[in-house]
Image (cartoon, rainbow, N blue to C red):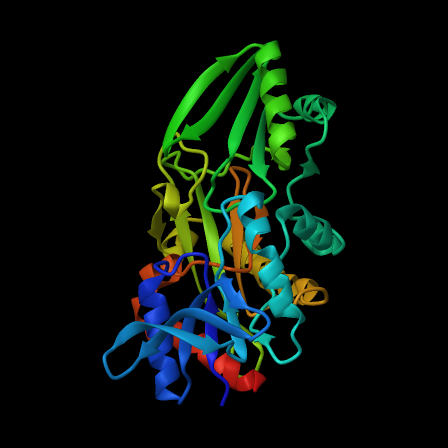
Amino acid sequence: MGDLGILVTNLHQEQMYFTDIAKAGCNKGMHVYLFLPTTIDANKKIAKGKRYCDITNQWVNETFSIPLFIYDRCFYENETTYKKYFPSLSWLKSQPDIVFLGHGLPNKWLVYKLLSKDPTIYSFLPETVLLSNRSQVSSMFKKHHSILFKPVSGSQGKGIFVLSKENDSFSLLAKKEGEIFFKRLTEKQVEHLLYKVMKRYKYLVQPFLSLTNQQQQPFDLRVFLQKDDQGQWQEIGRGLRTGKVGDFTSNLAGGGTVDCYDDWLRSLSSTAQVVLRKNLKELIERIPTMLEKHYPLFELGLDFGFDKEGRLWLLEVNSKPGRKVILTSFPNKENFLANGPINYCLFLQ
């Protein structure tokens, strides 16, 4: 039986989850290892990291042969971090005797372009452009009062900001060290800001959608999908992420909370509920199918917004979703989630 290696950028991340996976692996005769891509010796096909010991119930330092199965849980703060790990990741993925549970998705722009090819999915996507010049921003301001800027690569809402325009006056809404701040800008200051952004990073530009609840808190719906022990997609659960009043994201890392989807659904009219269920069902079926034509996948987090007019939006697709929304909404699924990667390994074997 092949062993499982969990690929990380920090040996201390997601400790409880990885330990639960390791215990599930031990119950089925599978060793589980943790290691960073940079610890790989490609010539000897070994890596340095940690192995879970079921006798002591602890992770122990060890040098080991690279396991047959790889569960990629690497998170990159920016493109610089990604480039640091890219050579090792590329080598791993090129080895015929190493099997990734999922290869993950590329950056947000490439995912958007791919999803746009499906007319049904496209109708739920916000207008999106890859920022390359100031005229794109000017064009979008002709149609929208506020514009959202988000990094092509990144997670947890980091680097996102909002520009608004009223007559010839501009304002900036952003976060600094987790705190929201608001600032008035002149046109020249906006030009300078965009110049700095385009010089250093790749950004997507979208209309800033009004995705708030009755209490004026930003919120979105996370749907968690994962393949079962037969290689078929299954929905594990869904829950709402709700941000603070005045915030423009609902990310849990930014102070958001988890709320019950069913409670919120009951607050809608019966007609709205029927339409929402129908649209979600179709999108949940179509999105994985569309993406898997190009990228092998194991799990997905689908993020949806619901605006004041009752329109559903597909905001983001994440191939390395966190588990907090599901575990908060369904605490009884902790063991089920831990067994997911192990069962999928057994299916692939």
